[in-house]
Image (cartoon, rainbow, N blue to C red):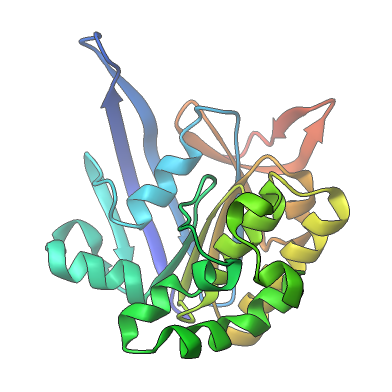
Length: 242
């Protein structure tokens, strides 16, 4: 099966405030994700993990190299097609997602309201996903400020699932969950890959992700390396293979 998301020798740098030199966040990264596959990217804070997701979501454009989705060079998409791509093709679970002052179910249904569905129809469509992610009927009626960070995180995941994306991009999707809830959410993500053929790229610090991933990498100093052990005494241990 052909890869859905492909990074080809991608470089990306940014400039810090009040500094002339640029910081290289991604240095010649090549990696791919096929339909039905879950790829995990580990790395320390500031390593550039989230940058890979933003590049895949057309929220950033590579300095050099190409990011391809289904054979299309994402850097060549104009504003309208790029917005359509983000809405229709991908689900993006951001670490600090946005919410509206409305019940959890309506927050999860936000993307669906742009498809012509009424609020009631949209909410009905996301309820099964919210239930699967551990938010019961009472929790689904609460507003985000009445929920824990972990519960709000699951709203973000349900929203990402809502339009049945081909590609799921997840930035620390278990960062606010305890170990039991983390494994449950990861099993749901894994299930989407297995049953719906979703291609998933997850950037994380969570060692539990490794058990659910098909391939695992460490991003360090902008370079991507495979690894075997995710943590030893809290440190990432990459293999020496590039």
